[in-house]
Image (tube, rainbow, N blue to C red; front, side, top):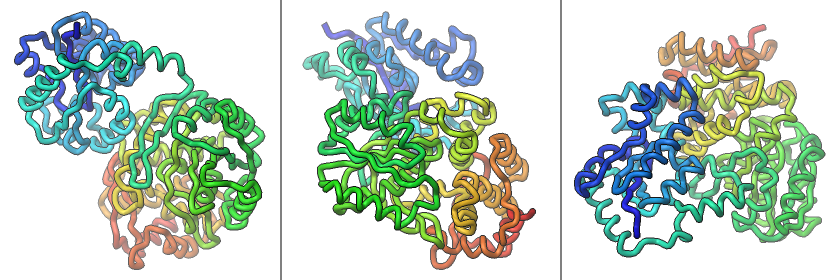
Length: 557
């Protein structure tokens, strides 16, 4: 017999609770809202539980609530937005008919803001649309695994309930076999039998390609399985550098060979100053000498330089071969590996030569960060801070509360949250014609500082931290950003040991270098500025005098 349970999954704002109650009345069934059950049992709101106990403890509560709800039949059960992310919850959902209420992040954000309990929603801190986009990117494959889906943007709750009732009637007549369902005990058993590939933290869906961003401890050892899952064939060519290669190239090769791939590795010299045409030519020579074919693929194994340069080599050799990014630095994990930007530096500017090319997968293994020296970790923290400053105030709060000495900052969860933010923006704007420009907060002055110092004095994240201070000064002077919010930004930058100034540089030379920035349009720079923590805007026509003032401030001895 088909179990008489209907589970509703989807983002907050999709209408699961309202629609579920109406559907239960139509069917004459019991209605259960797992979030309400959790709040009743704990005597606290979901937001309070998240703040007090953290997400992991809340997911345990959510799992117990689902187990209790699944003991009822017939019942319509509205789940929390993150319920499908709990592996042990998926066979429970498979004990009924699973329906995804698909809603766009923009519509979901508007509905949540209009709700009577809007102030109690932790999702609404900062930019709710951006947070919902990031959540959708990280969960979309789980949502797509539902037995049925309805587009909720233009439907009333009553219309949604009517459509679900119709879908339920059809499914009763012809239910999918358990072995073909994503949500079923059999599917869970298959997943448990092959735990090496972590679930995607985000899915990038850009015109240039759709691919998963996989975050998990030990993920590098699944590199070969991930390549097979991505449909890659032929030989694998690992591009790494002289620092990373001795540490991890052997593991990457072993993982590839365990999946049946033949692999060869090539190391470039380590350092930003080797992100050049000469180094690129040496990579081409290696690939040509090994007679690379279009059925082969490249694995970039390293930090930002290897990721950018190796990706550009893959995008251009034989007019393009597939590639996988396996970043080994926090900076590359949070920034360079996601979004399809590849390229090399020119003596007059950073990343001026390159191409947009999307990888087949991004494989992020946080365990690799244990080999990084403290300065390189700080280098990566700048990008995580930036993501919070521009789009996610809640992430900023979590970073303010986190320990700066240990695992919390290099945990899979924190990295996954950061990459999901970037993946959501990249999916919307692949070629930086719109919202993706926000990701350049701090980069205009930061890139100029790098160029003026020949890419040898400041690491990229350090230069961006100084650039964020300059952009914050401009934001305050234009009356966009309250001084208290600017000080909050700087306090967090200081807390993570990042620099606030580049003393001794020629302010005029830095200003001139900003004019070579890729964001210049008709001779005018498009500045990414803050209105508040968690909300960035793009502003053109910033007076030169104000830019000079900001640059002079951050270069003052």
